[in-house]
Image (cartoon, rainbow, N blue to C red; front, side):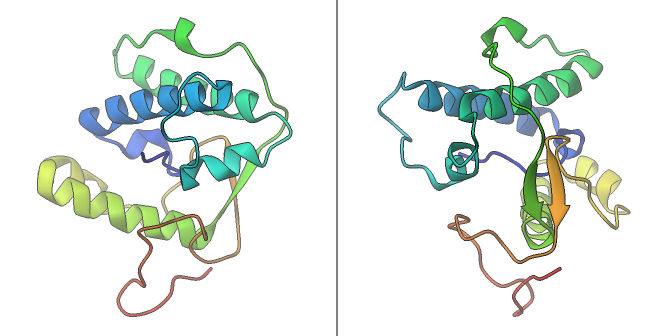
Length: 153
């Protein structure tokens, strides 16, 4: 499961569809509708919110908005009606880690898309997140130092 902290505009079609499906799965987990993925570390940041279900629903609304802007027809009725006030935070190190991870995925599966993103110097976060100083999130299981160094702000 990958619930990207990056803005969904950076995802290619395959990545955006996968994010939609994984976001809906995360929503089902937070609703208690599935036994799988209950302890998935990427859900921790949603579980820590006052309104976890509202937070994932807000996240999905932005994914839906991006998909719609590209002409895709995602089923908006699958998003929970719950709402959550405010924003979540994400560290600069987490954004950098995810950016490098995405670039590697795209290099293999969609080099043309990756080439279009090559000039991005400071990737934007998903609109639900506000960037704060810090390193890669502790819940990031696959985190390894980038270029032999730990990522920081």
